[in-house]
Image: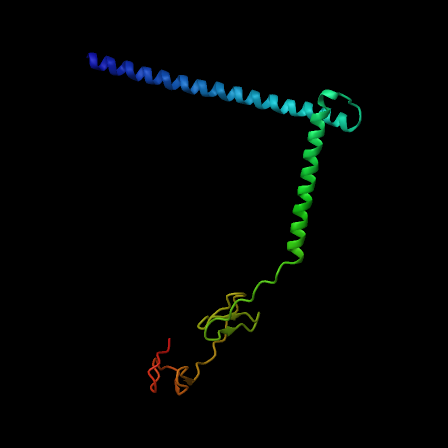
Length: 165
């Protein structure tokens, strides 16, 4: 029975600690939200007085140095945005044309609709989806090794033994 009492006490202790941790987390979140609200208000105060400075309505030597620093930061942002615009304009104007896709090995099939060259054996255009007319296979072909004409269905040249892939 003593063991069960200890086990029950341990469970209550763990439960209490978990509740305390949850409550502490909630309170820390509340503190964080209040600090964010203060930071937002401080920012609004700063914006208010900076606007007065820009309008010439504020002459406070204690903050003139800060206003000058802010002006410098705005100038840096303006210059950086100009540099970004220059780079974008340069890339837009001088963009190289996309290289043409290499023709598929074996010549390929040209689409009658969009004139895209498709791989041999393709039944529909990979660009526009049109049905492709497959040309009949050649009756004979020349061996690239020795030049002898061999039947198109041959896997090897009968003259030199060249293997067709």
